[in-house]
Length: 189
Image (cartoon, rainbow, N blue to C red; front, side):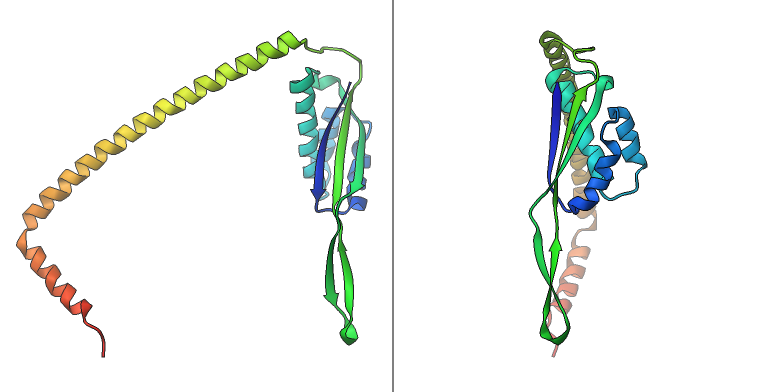
């Protein structure tokens, strides 16, 4: 079974993208990931991310085994070209073409049907993941509520401390503030 993933409008020229595509075409998925990790090209992190996406599609949507997959083909196409201008001598303008590319990675099974999961198994795994996610969300909500209660308690304590300090200082502070406010309120001449 063939599984694919696409990446559109990556701001790297197709000619440069094809260099990396040729490295992984025909390799096992795990070896292709290693190859992309070791390759020093601007396209390789994007391709690695796309290959991970294709593998995730194969596992989650079709129940295929990750170990049984290989890179069947990598299709590189030209995306829209950005046209820019650079000033040249004698008032002329030189055309600059900033090319983009589209990438599609197609994966296929080495041995057809090996370690493939049935629909029932996939549904059970999805249900288990959903339950685990719900448990995590409940735990987060409880933590958030506890933190909010602590913050409210701290605010109440701070307010009571402030009100007692204000009462102690009394009128002396009010007079000092009034005097300073009058000085700083005046406009300069």
